[in-house]
Length: 144
Image (cartoon, rainbow, N blue to C red; front, side):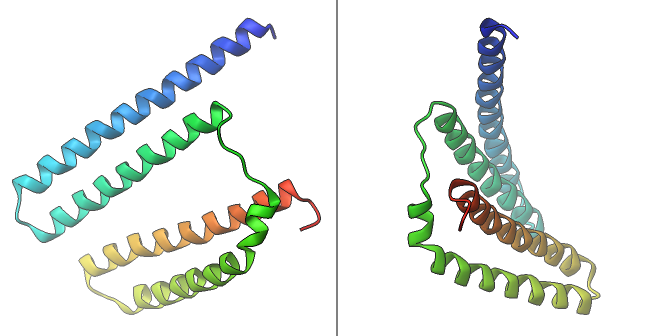
């Protein structure tokens, strides 16, 4: 593969990330319109969740752009310094997953079950993110 091909692929990828960030702006605006057009608590909550997620997506895409530019670093020491805090937080998140699973199983209310399902997946996502930090630490310092 020629250097030019790699540069063009990188440029295409970076353009895609920029377009995605712009799309998140449109999504945020759309959710605001939906929230302003209804008084329904459930619809407003769902639109608010999507809006907040899109705001997080935009922030993460910005971090990706920075990472591609080489402006982000992570050392084993940085993770090591907070390792105990991360481990303790992981336990909290696992407890939240366990409780969410119990509550989901105990609920028979249609709307409540859907909302609990969303929360359960979010808690599982938190566990995954914390486990990824541990993976970063192992990758950076294979003896950790």
